[in-house]
Length: 242
Image (cartoon, rainbow, N blue to C red; front, side, top):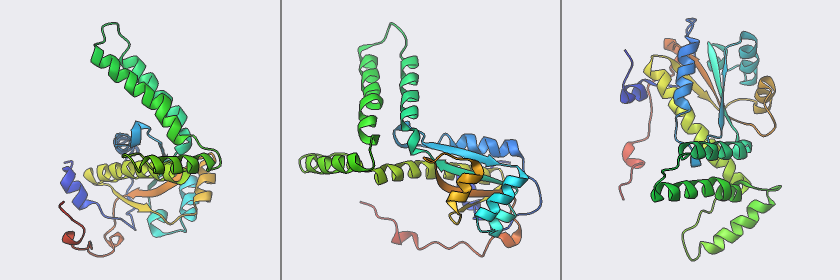
């Protein structure tokens, strides 16, 4: 029986050793469908998911992950990739979707206003924020927006490094959706930071603009794969009601 959200979150642990039992590729794929439903900045969905089941690729990726046991014993791997470089394509996809949704003659004044606002957002504001050249435009926008920010609230994260962070945050949200979904059906995962990201990109034949967000190992936990009881700092030390 599938677990509730709270049960899945409680069940999920970073698993470093997996059993020999195979896992259902289609079920993992469905968990990745859930990942694609995660919230994402401006609905740009600047992510890709590489579901690795090929044995040769698994072995190569395990080496790129320094042969850590979580990678070596995994039955499948998922590589979450941030694709900030696809912002133009994703913005156009949003505009195309809006044009399709509002493609009728009986639009109300409210709908017309909403369509114009949304298409202007993706056609004008997003290019203003994401367009850059060697980081130079980003710093110019950063300075301009800081000055404007002296007089009113303004979006300040306009540098190349800022937009990379935005893309990785969205990819991280998708990864969490995936791992929670896996836990809900009794499958285990381990998000791995430790990898040679250049080699991972080469193994997957990724373009230059792609960035590895994390590699997630997948399988069914072995008892020795959970390294001790869960530790969290006291909730009161991280919770602040304002």
